[in-house]
Length: 340
Image 1 (tube, helix red, strand yellow):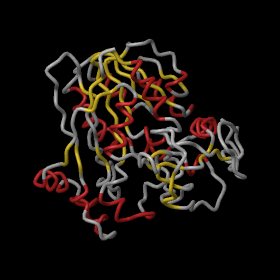
Image 2 (tube, helix red, strand yellow):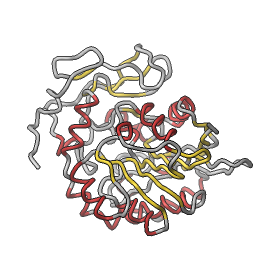
Image 3 (cartoon, helix red, strand yellow):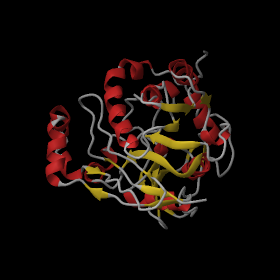
Image 4 (cartoon, one colour):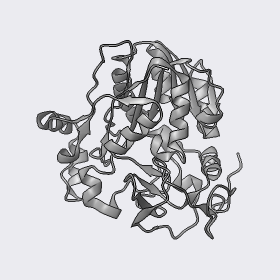
């Protein structure tokens, strides 16, 4: 596959909003559509954007990002201006992330835990993984008895995913995937929603693809957790590939606006947090270098089944798969898919 030139993203296709000199697009709030914001952090980018550096799942370009703003109406945090959505899709299409494959063992452990949470609510059925990358999760799900399918923008990753499972893997995004309405019992979206130029559009497509009462699993980072609040602009997950930064509240509001009903979310009990962190002492040791105690910021979702024939949209804490990663800023929400 030919590799796009490093400045391809900055000079890629335009459209939809005021454009800056770097070929970016000024956008409205992804939650409430307002156009009033305050600047949280100015851009730290000084170099042209290279998909292989800035858009891989294992990117190490921490703290390299476009301008980060906060909506004055609803408070959601997002990149503005940002690259056009077609340029973002092109960039992910070109990505080849060999380092991700090298970390397969750790990712199997992480996704096995995620799958166990999903199976509490849907032990089998048709499952769609949005952003399936090289197929680690959908292979685990297939081995557990699910009939699986995937959506993945990276051509390189999608080819590898398709070779691992019996089901189809669509190269592209959910909005242009041939997904029959109400076809899936489960849709998963592991650490993907923050990468989406238009998360509401994707969630509406997910809503359509799920059967009434289906299970939706989504994880993301909590921009209002302790660690990002203390670290400020030095929070490592401010990155060029992250376009929207959710809090527990703003993700809940977006889910509701797209047809989902938030069920519950609460902080992890202190004793449970200590027990969890005991398993990741190297991670906490790394956290101590920042002067931030990760235990205080750790949050986890609790899943509650409603006494009605619907299953919850669920999200679970993401523990990272290698020493040195920081788990204190991930969180989850539970919600129910409204009957259509």
